[in-house]
Amino acid sequence: MLKKDKELKLYYSIKEVAQQLGVNESTLRYWEKEFPQLKPKTQALNKVRQYTAEDMELLKTIYNLVKVRGFKLAAARKMLKENKSAVSSNTKAMELLISLRD
Image (cartoon, rainbow, N blue to C red; front, side):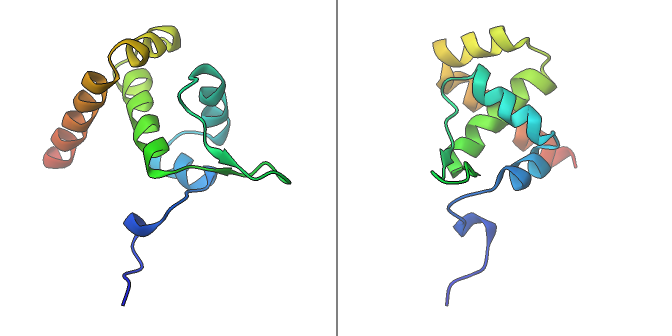
Protein backbone atom coordinates (compact mmCIF):
# COMPACT_ATOMS: atom_id res chain seq x y z
CA MET A 1 0.00 0.00 0.00
CA LEU A 2 1.20 3.49 -0.78
CA LYS A 3 1.43 6.05 1.96
CA LYS A 4 -0.56 9.22 1.46
CA ASP A 5 2.40 11.44 2.29
CA LYS A 6 3.42 14.85 1.00
CA GLU A 7 6.78 13.37 -0.02
CA LEU A 8 5.01 11.31 -2.70
CA LYS A 9 3.35 14.33 -4.26
CA LEU A 10 4.69 15.19 -7.71
CA TYR A 11 3.29 18.69 -8.09
CA TYR A 12 2.34 21.44 -5.67
CA SER A 13 -0.12 24.24 -6.39
CA ILE A 14 0.88 27.85 -5.93
CA LYS A 15 -1.42 28.05 -2.91
CA GLU A 16 0.30 25.11 -1.21
CA VAL A 17 3.75 26.53 -1.91
CA ALA A 18 2.76 29.96 -0.61
CA GLN A 19 1.40 28.44 2.61
CA GLN A 20 4.53 26.33 3.16
CA LEU A 21 6.84 29.32 2.69
CA GLY A 22 4.60 31.84 4.42
CA VAL A 23 4.51 34.29 1.51
CA ASN A 24 1.79 35.60 -0.80
CA GLU A 25 1.04 33.94 -4.12
CA SER A 26 1.85 37.23 -5.82
CA THR A 27 5.35 37.08 -4.31
CA LEU A 28 5.90 33.69 -5.93
CA ARG A 29 4.71 34.99 -9.30
CA TYR A 30 7.07 37.96 -8.95
CA TRP A 31 10.00 35.70 -8.09
CA GLU A 32 9.30 33.73 -11.28
CA LYS A 33 9.93 36.91 -13.25
CA GLU A 34 13.06 37.83 -11.28
CA PHE A 35 14.77 34.42 -11.16
CA PRO A 36 15.16 32.74 -14.57
CA GLN A 37 15.97 29.40 -12.90
CA LEU A 38 12.44 29.20 -11.49
CA LYS A 39 10.14 27.80 -14.16
CA PRO A 40 7.18 25.82 -12.79
CA LYS A 41 5.14 23.77 -15.21
CA THR A 42 1.98 25.47 -16.41
CA GLN A 43 -1.05 23.88 -17.98
CA ALA A 44 -1.73 25.14 -21.47
CA LEU A 45 -5.38 26.06 -21.09
CA ASN A 46 -5.71 27.75 -17.74
CA LYS A 47 -2.07 28.59 -16.87
CA VAL A 48 -2.20 26.80 -13.51
CA ARG A 49 1.28 26.61 -12.02
CA GLN A 50 2.57 23.22 -10.88
CA TYR A 51 5.71 23.27 -8.74
CA THR A 52 7.96 20.20 -8.54
CA ALA A 53 10.16 19.17 -5.60
CA GLU A 54 13.13 20.82 -7.37
CA ASP A 55 11.14 24.05 -7.69
CA MET A 56 10.36 23.84 -3.96
CA GLU A 57 14.06 23.52 -3.10
CA LEU A 58 14.89 26.52 -5.27
CA LEU A 59 12.08 28.53 -3.68
CA LYS A 60 13.33 27.66 -0.20
CA THR A 61 16.79 28.87 -1.23
CA ILE A 62 15.37 32.10 -2.65
CA TYR A 63 13.27 32.59 0.49
CA ASN A 64 16.34 32.07 2.66
CA LEU A 65 18.38 34.60 0.69
CA VAL A 66 15.70 37.27 0.40
CA LYS A 67 13.53 36.97 3.50
CA VAL A 68 15.86 35.43 6.10
CA ARG A 69 19.27 36.81 5.16
CA GLY A 70 17.95 40.10 3.75
CA PHE A 71 19.57 40.12 0.32
CA LYS A 72 18.20 42.33 -2.42
CA LEU A 73 16.73 40.44 -5.38
CA ALA A 74 19.64 41.35 -7.67
CA ALA A 75 22.18 40.09 -5.13
CA ALA A 76 20.23 36.87 -4.56
CA ARG A 77 19.98 36.34 -8.33
CA LYS A 78 23.74 36.85 -8.67
CA MET A 79 24.51 34.42 -5.83
CA LEU A 80 22.29 31.74 -7.34
CA LYS A 81 23.86 32.22 -10.75
CA GLU A 82 27.46 32.11 -9.52
CA ASN A 83 27.41 29.48 -6.78
CA LYS A 84 24.10 27.67 -6.49
CA SER A 85 25.49 24.57 -4.74
CA ALA A 86 27.03 26.53 -1.87
CA VAL A 87 23.89 28.63 -1.43
CA SER A 88 21.61 25.58 -1.38
CA SER A 89 23.85 23.76 1.13
CA ASN A 90 23.76 26.84 3.37
CA THR A 91 19.98 26.85 3.09
CA LYS A 92 19.75 23.20 4.12
CA ALA A 93 22.05 23.84 7.07
CA MET A 94 19.89 26.77 8.19
CA GLU A 95 16.74 24.64 7.93
CA LEU A 96 18.36 21.92 10.03
CA LEU A 97 19.44 24.41 12.71
CA ILE A 98 15.99 25.97 12.85
CA SER A 99 14.31 22.57 13.15
CA LEU A 100 16.72 21.57 15.93
CA ARG A 101 16.02 24.82 17.76
CA ASP A 102 12.27 24.32 17.54
